Length: 122
Image 1 (cartoon, rainbow, N blue to C red):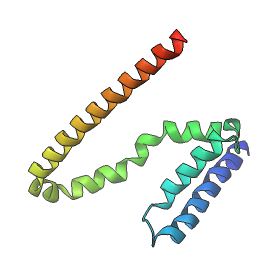
Image 2: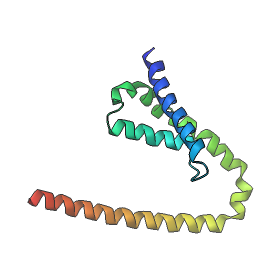
Image 3: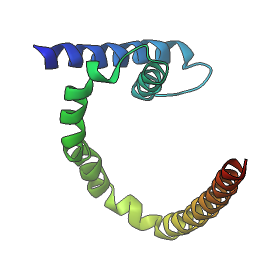
């Protein structure tokens, strides 16, 4: 029964995210599941929900995460001709975004290391 209660909490937050998403769709299009994840993060961050209240079902869902990517993989295979037609654009986008992510990550890590050194010195 404990897992069903935890699932009800997570599904309730998802439903609230869907509800909020339906109201803000004219302003910005954000899927309800994303809004729900943001709400869950905020609830956990500000201790509105204790981690122990959803720990068991969260572990089950995280352990089963690979299964949730199967539909996306099938959709990619079904769109293989579209991917082939845009291969150069995709490769360029992947390379460019990878370089940007690596650069930004390096800058952030350097700043964090400098801040850590400053904190230790004080």
